[in-house]
Image 1 (cartoon, rainbow, N blue to C red):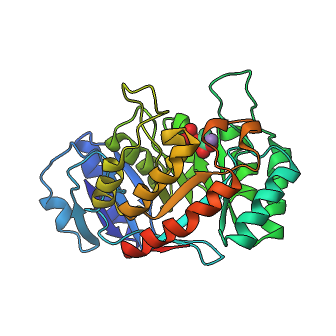
Image 2: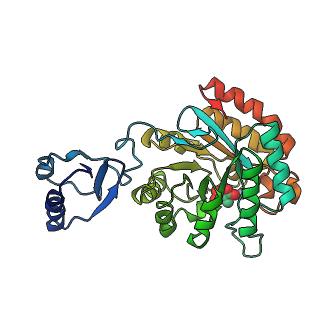
Image 3: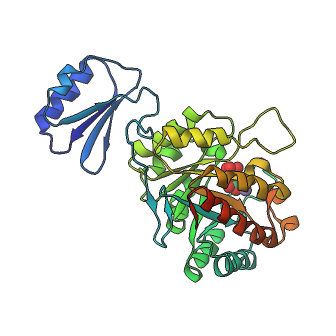
Length: 339
Ligand code: PEP
Ligand code: MN
């Protein structure tokens, strides 16, 4: 239950309302938004709300009927629109192409990719990780701060905005200094401290669905971020683990479609991590574009066979270049513009 209160509420009225909850042993979380104060209690609570509705400053009582609340379309019917400073917009009939290597490996590598993506293909968002969450401790873990410095160069030299991931809170501030969009990876979706810290940032957060999590759980993770103060969350479906071992994961396009319906947050798809096989990425990306999503996240590498992480799924620049006009036509066909 969300109690939406005008921020002009008097101190005494607020105390009366808080005491009312306290007496009933109902825990509430206070969230400040632009013009409102929200008191949010567990959605399971269904109480007599007559007392609350009598206050003039209580504007509405919203029961989303679900355990995720702030990410629900019942709470907010209009799309959340997220704009970056170079004209990139999520949530408004655009499909934003976000591309780049899995990891920053060297200056030559990312400069070369960024040059082709930006100058030749007009891609506006560059993705690459400096802190890589790897399953094996013996695999390349990313260049860390040196990688961030290289990403800053991309941002300065090309009119591109940067998506880069955080593994945990230790390097969050450094990543957030460089990244325009902070990515929370699939394995970190349950890092509640990280979610809450991302809620304190003034940056959009790209939240990847945990590969073993339900739709409800990813929306609850989004609520952790929003209720901590940051409403700019982008949901990313990147495939879930199923019984099928031949593709890396199974891209749950049903979830993407359902999330668009039940949540107001932008939804993007990541065909690369889902299928895990480079030759199949363009086909899966086409079906993702046809779904009509707010963005696509695609891995591309100048020499895929030498990529230090996620080698099997990286498109070459030639493969990527061939795919872009096809995606663009598909987006137009479904009433979107590929940017
Ligand atoms: C990535 O984007 O490179 C990545 C590690 O993604 P995920 O968390 O979805 O595996
Ligand atoms: Mn990757």
